[in-house]
Length: 128
Image 1 (tube, rainbow, N blue to C red):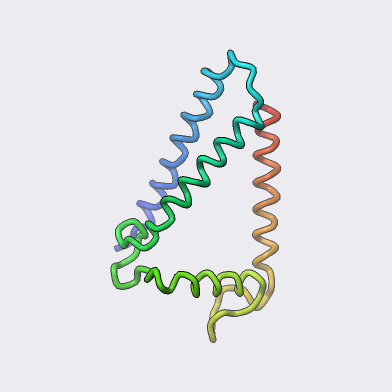
Image 2: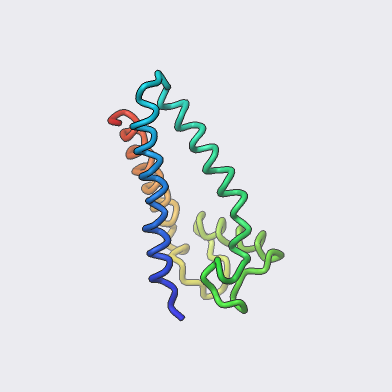
């Protein structure tokens, strides 16, 4: 079945903890003299550690949104990452692959995303 709706719902619901976190920081921590950069460092570190801890869920069929027969085998993960890196630097990883690698624009899209993300998040720290 098509699980796109559920992934959109999951992505949307992921904003709820972020909103609660921002309200909490604004309300509860306002009375303390706390450096916003220090606080966000610890928040980011916490998110990174949870991301690493939950990364293996990509191998669980129901959590990855794939059919059990299409779920990635953990033994294939290193090759999958290598193929992704090749695509990122403009080398097609598989014959007949259609991922835009041959045009060499993948890194530009990534760089544009990172730039906008950094500008948004840093400006968010200065405004709020």
